[in-house]
Amino acid sequence: MKQILQIVNNRVNAAIVALISAFPISVTAASPSNIFAEAGDKSASTIMLVVMFIIISAVLVRIWVGIMNHSSVQHDPIDTLEARKKSPYLPSFTTIVTTVICTAGLFILSLKTMGGIAPFHGPNAQSNAAIFFGCIGILSIFAEFIWPKAKHYVFAFSIGTVVSFILIGFYYMLFDRTVQQDPFFMALGIASVVMTWRFLFGPWRPKVKATVLGTFIFWFALHILAKETPSERSAHLLATGVAFIPAVIWCMMFLKEHKQRLSLVILMFFAGMLSTAPILFYDAMVRYNVELQFFLFKISPENFTRSSNAFVTGNLVGVSGMKSTLVATLISFMIVGLIEEFSKFWVLKKSGRRFFSSIDDVLQLGIIVAIGFAFAENVLNPSYFQSFVRSYLINPEVPQWGAFMGNVIGRAILTNMVHILSTGVLAYFYGKTLFAGPLLEEEHKAGKIHPIPYALHRILRLPEKLVFRRENMILGMFSAVALHGMFNFLVTLPDLLPGNPRTVGDLFASNPDSPLHYIALLIVPSMFYVVGGFWILSILFYKKECMKERGVLVQTDQFIPQDTFYEQYAN
Image 1: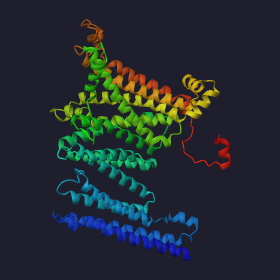
Image 2: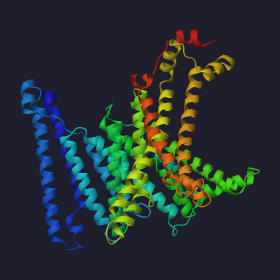
Image 3: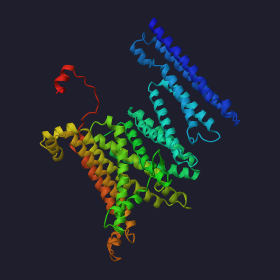
């Protein structure tokens, strides 16, 4: 009984101290007398007081219920506890104090970040930030009292917000012409961005990691929308809603046969959206002519097409005129494809490696990453869905729904399938590298031999499993880049050829009455990537090696006795 009373006493003290710590900070940060004094909004002040009173009353009631449950949990029978649905949980003092400190830190960071985070920028920045983070802090503390897992999501929200503010602040430091470019801060900023980006994909549970990425996307989207004009914001929101519909349909199609955890699907979709960051960041640097200045050198990002033209004309003898243009365009698209596919592969590896139990898992979740990438690309690139909304719905006096739906459906099917096919093939080969050991063992038992790994193992004594992994990664990346780059090249080809032919008849200069004029040049890549893409992915999905569950990859520590170690490894 004394131990129970001591536990209850400690909980009471912790709760009282937590309230004393949290209440002044939250009220000071979001005090109605301070916040609404400038605006003179008395009604808003009254509503704020009522809301705060209700929340604090609910927290106090929850604390008292928890204390009563703690005091009687050892004496009540199990059936009574289940009938009453008692929950003796109370958050620790450390959890509450950490929440208060994070809330205060996020409030300060929102005001001190270079360039300001919309809408925490401008004359009412301090009031807006105080209201928002004050409410977030109070709600977080309240959630931690009624839900044990709330602390994980409070942590995820804090991490996602901090990373968002740091990266957006660095963006302003880089692209704001009024900020003087200092080599020291430039080098420090680049290092911080790399570490922060890696930290964004930390080793957390799927739900927590998805919340971190979702928080980052929330702040990024809010910042973009707050900076746009009302007409631009309307077009952006409408384009986002339109692009989201085919993304959901694609996800449902590829998750129909084999269900995945919803948290993993959301995590991979968010990761795919964020995998667009490297190419968009590089494109912004090229458009704004930004130079990365360091101590002894500087880096000037160059347009891929211009670089490819310089490479072709300066290094490939005998290639000139139209051939030079075609080769340079193909090389530039291959470089873009390499960056995009490597970015998708990186987020797939960082986000899902711990949760894959079969090659089928890698293939499916890799496709979800590709769908997320395509969705973000359609929304963020002003030449895609935003352009369709403005050109066919907003600017004309009468909305042109036919042209709008035609462009939307064409891009939603064709370009999404390109990303799905290329990343799906890469994910298949990546899955083979993850399960290389058991896969090779099964194939050896079946009498199948891989020539390159077997030959290098026999001749150079290289580990067969290691060579098998490298071989599959090279094949996967090469296939993905080739599929991606060739599609972009084939779609652009009619604009590069003389006369800009649009049909097969135009290409071969056929008679005007020839039926070849009814066959568009784009039908060739469309048929291959849509019909052929479904055929290729179906073959991969139904391979026996892909469908077999092999377990989740884990890392374990193995302790070997000292005598055994010397016997095995001393020589």
